[in-house]
Structures are given as structure tokens and as C-alpha cells.
Image 1 (cartoon, rainbow, N blue to C red):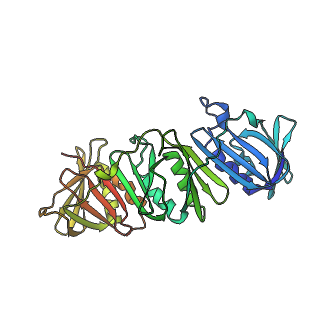
Image 2 (cartoon, one colour):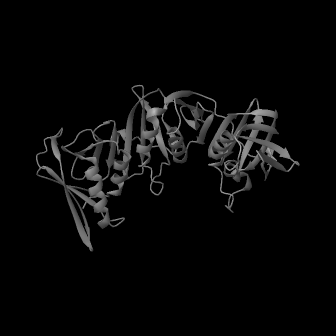
Image 3 (tube, rainbow, N blue to C red):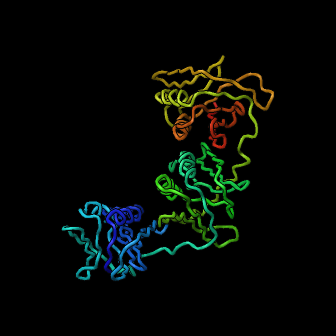
Length: 377
């Protein structure tokens, strides 16, 4: 192998592919999981890293003097990033090494034949195109409800309704649904694994244009085994779909409410943060108590109590409820969602019953809601 390319392109390719590799010092990880596959051919350099569940692949333009397929350590990006010149040359040296040359600097890293490295084939199948401008912030809002310490579902549900993308995530204590304006028609419900969604969300925030979402069919009709996100700049992020089924959550969403309270998002977020000081985990709670043109936010334990009163606007609901009632819940399950909609001024809180889930709705983007399970005292 002998290939020359932009130093920045090389650094970027190895950084993205290396992000899914095991750390070099991880003793329990097999050696192959600490390496990336480097494939020089067809006027480009392909760099791919995988742990067999999550795969990151990048293609960048390069001048290929001699093609080759090799595996090198996954942390090569750090080395390339320190090279002095604008271009870098990668070539096999003395058979056991890949030499990295840039300007007057050179280094070599150990290599193994590419045929010895496990690889994941590109996903071929049905695909749809999604606009990136809205996808990244919507993923961020849904990801707050996928706490790995609590969730059984290990993914974000992608589906479509009315020709538009719908995202949902839950950790059993709360559920966030985002009905987006992204036009698409998915072939079914797809549970995308959380690590893949996090990578896509981070990268989508830096990319332009659109991303192509592709599906690999599973053993049964209507089921999918893997999914990939193909960006226009040569980056592809893919992963295996968890075998567990995402619940049919639509039946659990409130269809009406007794009354609504509108408050400023920042004031509510600050009040919940203060209440968290006296919210003992896991049994503590935050209490929301409607008052006369205000909402009282409080919490207490044996060491103290904190109460904050914030201005509120009240609205009638879809039922005949005439007497407001309080709501208790774990504040941290709402605090991070409020942070994810930081661009919004107001939040609508819908009370659906004394012992029923409460619904927090982004007032500016009404398709985004967080449904929180109450604590019944």
C-alpha cells in the first residue's frame, strides 16, 4: 500500500472510524477490536472501525500509488493530527509496519494483514433520505429519555406517520416523542441502537445537506437486522438493531387533560434544579402545586425544604375538572428534557389526572412532548 492524501482528511477519517474501537489499554477487549481497517483503492482511502455491533466507515479522496488492505491501531488519528505538513503519505514499510510521513516527520505503526481483521459488509436494502437541519436537534431531545441505567429498550424508535418522521425514546419512567417536519416514508418501525443514535446526532450537527437511512432486512417479513446512516461526505455509521421490541406506546399517551399550566421554561428549569437539592434518590420527589396565577415547585427531606413560586397562566382542559391538584415526580427526569429545548421560551404542562402521567409540551414546537410517570403518595 502506498497512498497520499490531505492530512486533515486522514485525521478526520481515522478519528471517526477509531471512535468505535476499544481503547488500546483495554485488557478484556480482543486485539482486533482495537484496530481499524485501511483499504486503499479506486482513487480513495476507506477507513473502517467496528465492534461488530457498531461500525463507522469513512471514504476520503486520495492518490493511490499502490492499493492495499491493512489493519492498524485505532488511535492513529492522534498521531496524524500532529503531523506538520498539509499532506500525509501512508505506505507499508518493512512488511510489518505502516509508515506515516508528512514533511520532515515520519513515524510507523504496527500493521496486520487486512484479511485477518473482522469486517462488516455495507448495508444494502431499502433506504430513505432525511434532511439533516432538523434531525440533529430532534435526536438530542429524544435521547434524554434513554438513560442506559434504566432503559430496557436500548434504542430510539424511528417511524413515520402522515409522511413525516416520528422519533420516540423511553426509559420506563418517562417517554419523549418528537413529531418532526422531516418528510419521509419509512418501511416500518425501526429501533436504532442508542450508541449509534448518539454518534449520528453528534455528526449530523456538523454535516450539511441530507443523510440516507438504509435498512438490512431481518429473518422475518417487516423486521430489520441492521441500519445505516450514509452522509454525503463519505461517512457511514451503522449498527445492528436490538432484538428487543419497542412497546406500542401510542395507547399510553394522554388523549386529553384536565387543565394546563404555561410557565417560562427557564424559570421552571431553575426551580426544579433547586428542588433537586432535597430530592433524595431514589425515593425523593419534586412537587408541582398549582396556586392562584402561580405554580409552586417544592421538595423536602429530613434535612430541609425548598419552595419556589413562579408565574403561570392557566388554561382549561378537555374534561370537566374544576379543582386543580398537585403532581409529584422525580425532577431529574424533566430537568434534562427542559435543557434539551433551551431555545424555547415557554412550556405547557398538562395535568391528566391525580395519579396519571403528566405531559410537558414544548410551546414553540408542539410536536415535542415529554410524558412523565408520577409518584403516587
